Length: 582
Image (cartoon, rainbow, N blue to C red; front, side, top):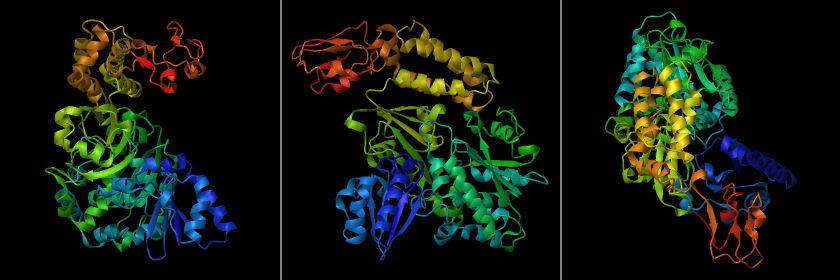
């Protein structure tokens, strides 16, 4: 019998280490013959800590939200008694979160120990590398990726084969292949989970890509805020070298290749490849003019190719199953699957990998379970700060590069921030613009100053100080920032503002002309009142941090608006619906 405990960042954050310690204690005290092991995140982050119990015959029982106080019962009733604890097991409804997905990138995450190369090899790991290096030419590898039509999973969806072929065609004594693991979008954690749960799949994709373009060295540019990912990458690299999958004469092919890690400081602008290269060279992460493109002159002026984590994680599957098999998944030119990080006002937050072309509705409601507290779905932010809001009226839009762009958003790296009826779209635009303003490298005047001016306008509007003409000024600035910025950060920074203006213009107008926040969330534009439903229980007055609520026991209370800081504690506390937000 084997017990596997999920220990991705999400599992550890919810107490998986304490759960593991309790299992070790209980198993030792009760002298139970069982193997304890760990794995990465399976994707159901909302159910962590997760514990899988495997019987000797291969049957598996999944337990969810396993805090230390549940461990003893699992040990006694299941590990010793042989009877699963049904009340702790995953429900049939939650099982659908995974059942409705189609997994290529995440196929091993949550199933193998990411720190044991033998487990990766047991599921076919490095067989694709062996196949490529011993029986395929570089052109044949690129041809397979072209047939698959694998597009970059980190942003605009540029064809991977084209970038590899361009780097291959440019002369250079040394060539480099770089993995961009500097995942910077708020709410996005796809790449982190892959690196923590299946690092060897990324290494294998880099080896194959390096062979195809003739690279001699690979670099993984990973943000320093991902310490667990870096740790597991370091272990994976050492193990791959010991097995001979990295280093000299790999598989006796005469091909020499190795990979190293560069920890980045977490600058969003380094998602732009020339800024990333500058950072790799020890310079400040700032973009440069193109051409020349990195495929001609990149890292240390040598031919360089950059793809993100998810892109590389697809490669070995394509080599082993064929480009045609990958191309059959998806819709039109958007082939294969895409991993999305579901976050925000959604019931089931986590990672979902689905075929390209699936409607947004199916991702949010079919897999994510819908909106928290069954509130109305309002919009979803796709593509992070570089993307835009897709409103409820467009929820049936297929998730393809082409269809999502038509809405004003982008697929991007795969973040989905779900918003409900209580979300103020003006404040949401302000939040994302504040992020891009802070992350701007400052090289371009329009990006550096223009985003600050736009943010100042949005901050005024959310404070109830909007002016006639603010909307038109936002639109004018947005156009100039797009046209006057050198890289993708500045060119896309206005997108959250432009899409909210397009679909939720009435909210801007309400803020400016009616001094009202439609969603009732901007503090400066709301106030709380106690209605005649109040029974005088005094619960709200006890919770008020500034003593703004007064009244007699069993009598109706009142709120002193001059003292109220609009924290909402009173509304949260009242069990009788007597406090309303206006």
